[in-house]
Amino acid sequence: MARILHRSIGQALPHAASAQGVYITDTQGRRYLDGSGGAAVTSVGHGHPEVLEAMRAQIDNLCYAHTGFFTTDAAEELAEQLVNLAPDGLDYVYLVSGGSEAVEAALKMARQYFVETGRPERRHIIARRQSYHGNTLGALATGGNAMRRQQFQPLLPQTHHVSPCYAYRDKASEESPEVYAARLADELEAKILELGPESVMAFVAEPVVGATLGAVASEADYFKRVCKICDQHGVLLILDEVMCGMGRTGTLFACEQDGITPDILTVAKGLGGGYQPIGAVLLSSAIYESFANGSGLFQHGHTYLGHPVAAAAANKVVEIIARPETLANVNAMGARLQSGLEAALGASPYVGDIRGRGLFRGIELVADRELKTPFDPARKIHAKIKRQAMARGLISYPMGGTIDGVYGDHVLLAPPYTIQADEIDLLIERITQAIDAAIAE
Image (cartoon, rainbow, N blue to C red):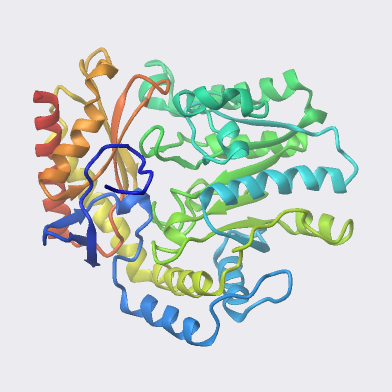
């Protein structure tokens, strides 16, 4: 009898035993193609020798030192590398242990910034419906996924939500991408004005929405408009790149493709590549200096932040991702994945949309393609796809609640950046078979 409280109680999970490249092998000797990188975590592949060597070297020297007493070369070098690679204007780094921690820290940074600069009335957070920003209470409150929030609603601080940039379902047929982007930006500004500009603290968004919509990128100049509105009203822009960042969409930071720089940016998942739990918050000089010239501290912290072994692993992972050949492969294999999915599933009456950037692709499933009608949630199509894919030796990331947190199914694919053309073709074949089998059940 297992003594672990698993995510799904009573489910018999295979025991992972080893991994190499894009494959995980269980204790029965069965190999699984890691088509989703776990939860978009595995970036440079399993068992990368350079990352393992960097971790061994760090372990030999120092495993842990509390950041209340020491800094370490590993943490300092990671922060320096991230700032050097980040969009101009992100000048400092706060290291944490994962994505939820990063978002929670970003929210507290935003609040403390306004307190330090004499504007404590700024308290409201605006985010987007059908977003996901983590499972800690502040991050969960910021996210707009109804299903995840429902039972915890009495515990959540108040937040406000506007429409996502979700053209497949929400853009009117007569709207151009530019008109649609302008309409959404106007909605954000209207919400800021409704709450009172002097009371709004931050707008939080994923440049490419991950688990709750399935690799949905923005339209036209949406983020440039958002950035301008936030600047006009003195609202901080927080971009959550926990899932879509660190090379996943074809550039190291996803927001590079939108041509903007936020005030605060969060990363995790692919930052450590699965080798150690780690996340980071990148922040502007203005926010850093408000702390430095005010109270002299950031009133926040966790026991394992800045962990030297995690920092050493992430430092090497980031170095590998930033190599031109790595990002070139992300873009080339991403294009192959998109075109292959379109060829295999583009005519399916049950596939409404195939989308994404780089090696971050989503497939939205529908019961009626013309009407975009979702499947009855009681059928749990996403759960069936996961089971069918695993039976075929493929790890995928299907989710329900694409539309409102209850209705709608999609599959997220986010394989390691080292994946090659033949492995992409195998992924496409297996996910196509799994979708067909799941719908036939």
